[in-house]
Length: 77
Image 1 (spheres, rainbow, N blue to C red):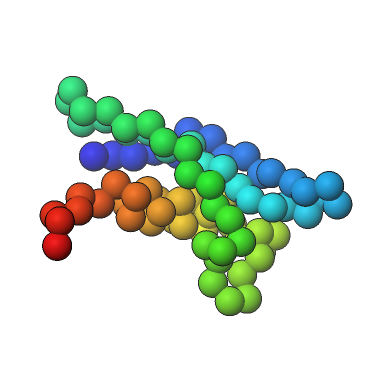
Image 2 (spheres, helix red, strand yellow):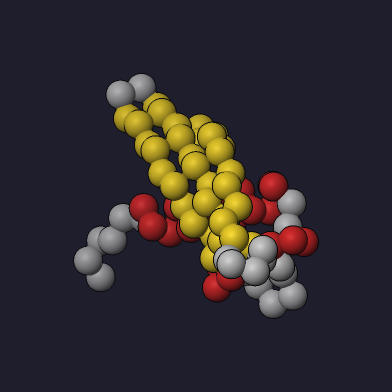
């Protein structure tokens, strides 16, 4: 399925620091549709990464990885 970024929103704390970034993702394959909002939090960043240092592509890559993990089918094992 071809999943596209539909929006990217920075969320700030009371001190003007980015606290998370929400990425909207959408895709379809025939009759199958997917719409998701994935929140990229500080816990999702690797050591040394900051919200200010990430490109839009970096953020989208993290959000797509979170989506893949969240939607992975659990075979019960």
